[in-house]
Length: 299
Image 1 (spheres, rainbow, N blue to C red):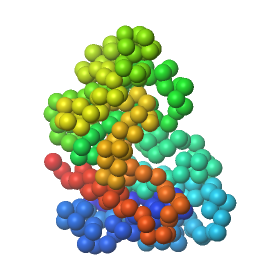
Image 2: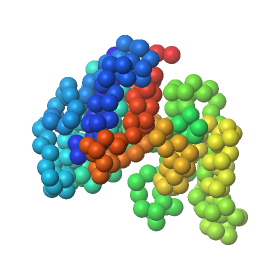
Image 3: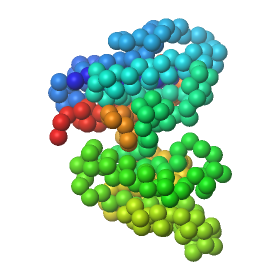
C-alpha cells in the first residue's frame, strides 16, 4: 500500500516535516511495520525528496513575492494526490500545512484543505480534530463569525452528525457513538435571553439526529474530556478548534470525514517564520502519518 504525502506550502515547515518521517526507522515505527510506503508529492528543490514533482521551487529571499507560486504548487500537489487516491493508486493522503491566502493567490479558490478535498472528490466533507483525549467536529468551518448563526441550519447539523457517526464507526470502531452538540450562544441561550437559535434550531436538530444537547460550550468539552462523549459537534470554528488545541496541541490530528479514502493532517499551520531553523515540532505530523497508516490496514 502507498500513502500519499503532500509537501504543503514549500515556504513553510512542510518539507521538513515530511523529510522527518521518511527516515526508515521513523517510518517503520509510525506504520507499525506494515507494508506501507510513502509517496511524496510536491515541489522539487524543497528540502525533501519528491517522488512525484508538480513543479520547481526556488527559494527566494522575499517569501511574500513567491506566495502565489507557493500556493499554486500546494494546490497542484493536492490535486495530484486526490487523483491518485480516486484511482486507487494510493490508499490515503497525509497533507502538510498550506497557506490559505497563498492557495487563493495561486488560483485555487477554496478556503482550506477540507473544502478543496471535498470538491475534488465530489463529496461533502466534515472537519474533525482528534486526539486520544478529545474529538471535535466542526459544523461550520472557514466563514466569518457574523455568518455562523445563519449557516447553522438543522440540515447542516444533521449531515454533520451523520458523517461523524459514520466516521467514528468506520475509523475508530465505535458501534454506537455518543455525540454531543455544543451550543451556539452563551449558556445555550438561557431560554432565549441570549439568543433563540439554540432553542429554535439546535435543540430540535439534536433530537432528530440523536445528539446530546445543545450543551453550553463552557462545560461540554470538559465533559467530553472526562469520557462522557465520543465527539463534540461545534457550530463555531474557533470554539471547537480552541478546545481541541488547548487540550491536545501537538498530538491532535485533522481528519476529513466523508471522503472515499483516509486523509489526515497535523493540527497546525505552515509556521513560515521558523521554517529551516530546526525548531519545528514534528509530533502532530507524525501522529497524522500514524493514524493514516492505521486506517489503511484492513480491520
